[in-house]
Structures are given as structure tokens and as C-alpha cells.
Image (spheres, rainbow, N blue to C red):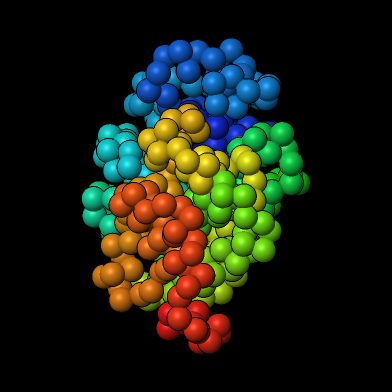
Length: 338
């Protein structure tokens, strides 16, 4: 029985702990708050994953050193803006061969870096061989109930990705491997922007046609930016690309979609985020992607209009009209050239 540490104690951290414990691993979660650790130790994370009876192999603690001590792998399940801080705090307690698994779907706002680049800055580029990103279409509410789910583990070392694959694989939780860290990280982060935009369209009471158009054209601009940054195009046709895009744009489990719906209905950004009551990664990611698109010289019209709705007081309805009124384009060529 291997010990796996999880830094974080939210819904996704708890659902992954359940998967690992059911695979006979000993799992310890780190929580900032004593009351949340207490709930988990009592057998249910009623704050973030209510109604799921937790496996007896799961425990929680507020002592980071104690949580990380002796762990063969550590999962970082924290918001992207907290990743660097918690990584720096954790590194002194990790062994040189501890596998680091990141499940945050975001980018660092201050530096515009992907989270693997943040990891390399803090742990050294040599340590990237033990870093893996786990991503794909997955709601904690479903994973916690053992609803069949498929994800992808990406690492520059295939042996590390395969190790993570073996750690999590079960009859209800299928894991594929992919060497394309860039594509998997960008797919997981950027789909949240499109989910915000799709949610806004839903809040305006547009229909399925609009949603399908937003998702399809959203995938095109995600692919354009990813390609310009060195990602493999095929990654965006996989679980971390179109798979995660579909689930995030269509489900009411999606925080980003729910936030977008409230904005489309007339709430301010602050009111919409507060109504979701959990971190909405797409808000910060929209800021980052807006800047990355300019830096890379890539056209990202949905990201651009979503940014203007969120941060420049553009009305949601006007944003959709701006998207529909763009100049004529050739679809297939536009995927690569904008």
C-alpha cells in the first residue's frame, strides 16, 4: 500500500482521494482549515463533495510536512494562483523521486506561464521528468460516485505518465498517457474561457445552435494558440481538448458555465463568481489568454469578446453580435491562421 499525498481538500481533491483509496492506496489530504480536515476524517467532505461516504483509507491534516512525509506521489489539487506558493512550501518535504501530479486547470496570471513551467522554475528543469499533469473531462460530483470517467496523464517522461496511469486506473477510472504537456495543460485551461462564453450565451437564452458554434469555434482558437506555443494538434482532438470542452460547456456541474450563465442574465462578474461559491478558474485564464494571444500574434475572437465582457463592461449581447458580425472566413484554413 503506497502513500499518496494530496495538497488541497476541495471537491476534486476529495474525489481523486476516493479513486486512489479504492485502489488500495493510503491517502492523506492537506487542508488549510481544521474544520474541513475534521469533516473529511469524520467520513464525508460535506462542504465540497456532499453525499459521498469516504473510503476508510482517506485521512486529512493541516500539517503539510506530516501529510507529505513518506509519500511516493503528491497530487496538487489547488487553484492555479495558489500553485507556486504551495509548491514552494512542499518541496523541502518531497523526496527526489517523488512523483508530482498537478490537476489544476489554469495558467499563472502574473507570469503567463503554464504550471509545468512554474514547477520547473521552482524545482529545476531536471525535476520535470517526475512531473505529470492529469486532465480531461471530469466532474468531481461524478467521479466521487464511481461514474465511468476517462482522463489523460501527460509527462515528458513516458515512464512517469505510465506510473500515474497505474496509480489511478480502475474499472471506473480510465487513464490514457500523452507526452504533450503543453497541449494537455493549455486544453485544460483554455476550455474554461469557452465555457464562460457558452454560459453567457445560455444566460441570454440563445439555443443549442449557438452553443455548438461557440464550442466548435472555441476549439479552433484553443488549437491555434496551442499550435503557436508548440503543442501537438492531435491533443486538442482528445480528452484534454474537445473532451473537456464538451463537458465544461454543457454541464451544470461546471463552475465556469454557471458563472457565465449568471453574467448573461445580467449579474456583474463579482456577483456571478460569488453565486458559484467556488473558484472560477476561467476568469483569471481569460486575462492570461488575452495577453498570450497578443504575444503570439494569434486571433482568439471568443476569448477577446469574453475578456471585454468580464473586464471592460461590454454587454454580453453586444459581444455575441460582434462574434457573428466578423468578416467572412474559410473554416479549415482559419483553424491554423485565424
